[in-house]
Image (cartoon, rainbow, N blue to C red; front, side):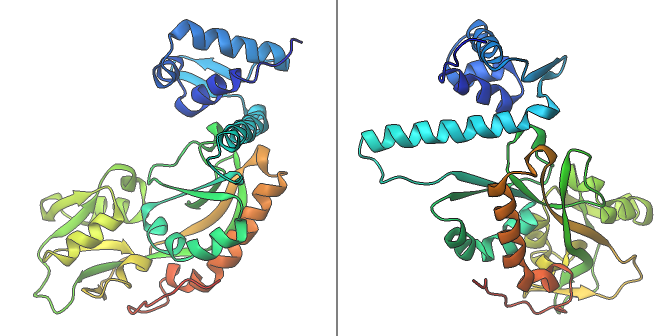
Length: 298
């Protein structure tokens, strides 16, 4: 094996983040051949391939997730060293990235942010709000707070509660006229699939790919729609409607990539996240009945 060139880390991480040599080259301001050469250099120095070359792009090999985590940490330390030399900071910790849906990012994760930030200091938090599931195999995030019936094979984690959904409309309304539907990543949800079978398409007056956006739209319209109870119950302008609909629930998991399950820092983050979420599990489960004046607890 050859001696590792630490500058190659930038190229490895760019390909891991983008999944594409061309996209990595554009992000780094170099040409395609330079990225290929740097990736080959890194793989030769480290004793084997890091990526699987597929027609759709470059995908991280399942057993190389720890390599990318280590590369990220090394890059963060290099950046910290440069900043210290330039007098820009007094030393900060690692960046810990948590991904979740907009519904959970804008409620419980926002509520617990001050306490979570104190617990992980000097490490720093980054929240990644995305309704489509972020590819954890590429290590775009360290930990996921994820609604899913089951975890995919590349993830390990613990179920912390069930998220409940309900039908909501503007309070003190006239009889609701039409439905607001779900599109994009929300189309895979149980409520969206129920609507596809039970609601006449002509009754769907508008759609959105964000439950947070649907909450705002319902508050300004005379329609009805399905929302996570944690959003609908907390919106004073909305009320939950008692309709003959299924009991929509989906498990909520705190999870990480399986190859990072042995990482002490990841386990500490997951355990801290679970502990701070405990006071808010009833809100996620829709047990607050329609009044939710919740405050993050440290």
